[in-house]
Structure formats: C-alpha cells, structure tokens
Length: 138
Image 1: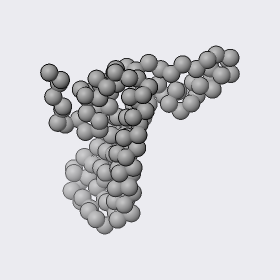
Image 2: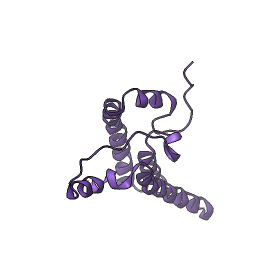
Image 3: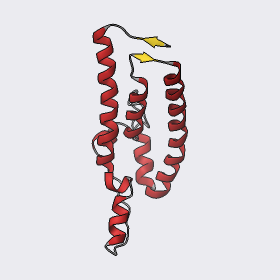
Image 4: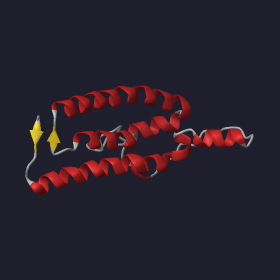
C-alpha cells in the first residue's frame, strides 16, 4: 500500500470524488455529442446515404470551465481512492502522463479543425485544471 485512508468520512469523501470523476466522464460525452464521439452518428448517416458533417464548435456546460473535462474526469477517477496500491499508483501515473501528452496532439488537431474560434477558446479556458483561471486577453 502506498496510502490507506481508514477514517470513514475521509474514505467516503474519496469514493464520492471518484464517482464524481466518472460522472463527469460519462456526462461529458453527451455534452459534446456522445453518438459522434463513438462513431455511431457517422454510421447512421452513412447507412441513410447522407454525408457526414462534423459538429460545430460550441462551449457548453463543463467546456466553459475546462477545455477537456472528459480527461479531467478520468484523472479525478484514477487518483481519488482511499487505498492506493503500488499497481494503482503506476496506472494512475501512466494514464495521467498519457492523457497530458495526448492532449497536446488533440489541441493541435482542434486548432486545425476549428481555427481562430478554438484559438480564442484556448486562450480563455484552461486545458484540464480549472484553477487558476487564465487572465482574459487585454
């Protein structure tokens, strides 16, 4: 064990935080378009003989607070545990590093896809950690 929280209220607080992380992951997919994210919309359009058009860029709900709430939810869920084993720690570290590196590539793709709209969004809204907030451009 790397750490073990035995105080009942603290353990339940961490379980609640973990559940909150998974809730953010699940609901974030619907905020951006769950069916498009998992390729279901593309298949449906193809089956109906229609051309796929990517969804337009919009700031909704969590996406007004952080640019990648889905990834923030994963990070919260991976780290919020009252009992951290060495294996869980290795997993949490590896996944956090992977997420942070992958987001660099995703940001580049989002800039290419959405242009200036995403560039302005990127300057106003933090990537994963909602605090501290960046200063608005002057």
